[in-house]
Image 1: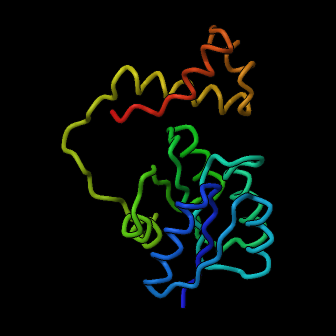
Image 2: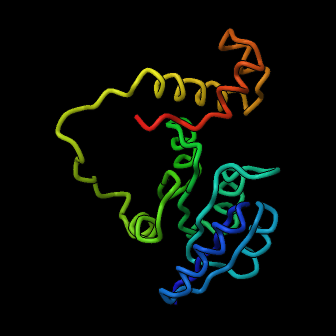
Length: 177
């Protein structure tokens, strides 16, 4: 029987996913933060981990790094509502198997775990759809913020904008297109 650990600081969302995975026959462990997750990973040794990127304290990227050091065969899917190309790239470099934006249902998550990363995916579109200006700005801000180790003051300085302006932009959700 496959086992999975769900790491998300949103309790309601985490418990709903836990019920859905349990109903499908998975052994489910839950954690609300990185430290709790690492303790359970070391004790329970799950097959899979579903990790939220943004949590209080340490981030999901920290969890990926530390969990992969301890349990290299752990298959990790990152799930986040604040997705960007920079964080997706960083997560995959650290050893994440796949990266999904919230909201995602259990079927999407299972597909991500079962997807073979070595096989090329089929193209979803025949033509390249350029991102909107708002999306391009969001991606650039996320890349600069990631380069500054999530230091808002340093990122604002690099971007040439006021720190509060950057904070307001970060509180908004990422544009869909």
